Image (tube, rainbow, N blue to C red; front, side, top):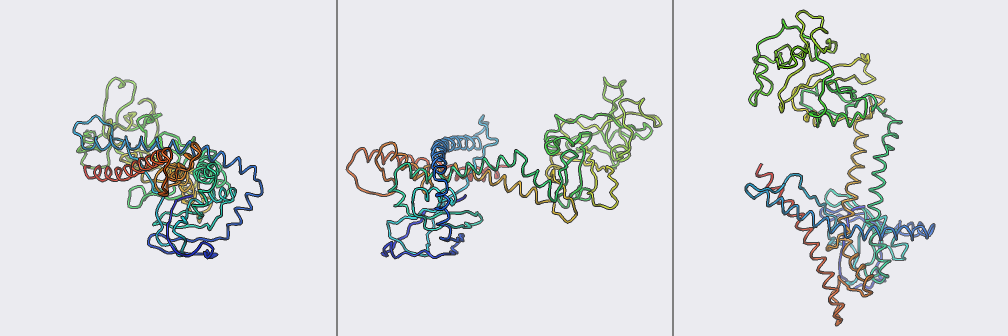
Length: 507
């Protein structure tokens, strides 16, 4: 379910002369729309199957819609306030305002269709709203459906149902709300269903029994590696990453991957040191780590800084420079807790040393894809020097590994991302569309709520003359809310754009 659109056109032709074609395709600037009347009877037949269920279903929708109606207004007020604080913080000197993580994002859901291919009477307003929920609710309340269809507005796809606005206004207030709130109600259902699919692991379990296999008890499978990076020469799609340093990824592998690379300060604990020989130590230039030399100041790049971990040196920090590859890029290197555990000449037990705040060396243990001929199921090792968060950005991983070489690695993660975006947009668009602002469903919901409470149609859309003072006051009250919320929406959209532009300019 997507955009809401209201279109108004005029003609001297009576309504009886209107004929909507079976299929219609309109190709207007930035908007391609396909509509049909084929599904009109389908929605009516579904309603007739279990009418009592639909009555309860859409009554729940009214409750959810009204709650979301007021909740959405509160969200907009809060977003407006936070945006105001952010802008003051951006331009204020020595401001104590907190400006981080303030980015109210609003996705526009409504637009105006100006070029309809057929004519209607000037008072015959057409409403285009998300297809499934509104169409079923309209069919239940015997409101005639003109057509349903899909559209592409710029790059945003959506679906709509079209019916007569005047006929909607003639219904009782509760029936109007059932139709109007059906959109946000079905957005909420889609959000809950999608969230259940993700959190219950149903989607992952299904795909893990098809062309992919679950590897969450082994590690994470490589989906892609950014080209032109050092890691792309070693890590390839479908390889299995089993460990980061001594941190095993076999339990909750995806969470472990994210946590280790993004919260390393809390998780970096080496289970044991590495055996080396003191005879191989060189000058301490590699331990001269600073802002100008984050990886040390050694002339060559074959040595790294290490610290001794023998118990005799536990009270003081003793640094030494040793060859990197034989120690950190050696899958068979001897591990130790003290010098006595090592069998090498002039043994010392060491760990990589990096001052706090500087890049740590990261050992990435991996295995080849199952179909690789020379695959002997032995772990291999690559050493990465740099920010750990960069690895998280460069390497995309999943807990699903293809069973065969011709199976794409990106399909599972793309399906999951699509579902996550659908969930997010369904919730955001549902809340946005029920706001009492011009051209949104909330505009008509407010009119129906006022009618339900007062018993008088405030007619917020049309300029019908009335001498009733109570009617005039209610109408002013309703329009005041619409202007206020519309202003909030405009402020958040334009203010966020303004804030983003100036925040990036000042970087």
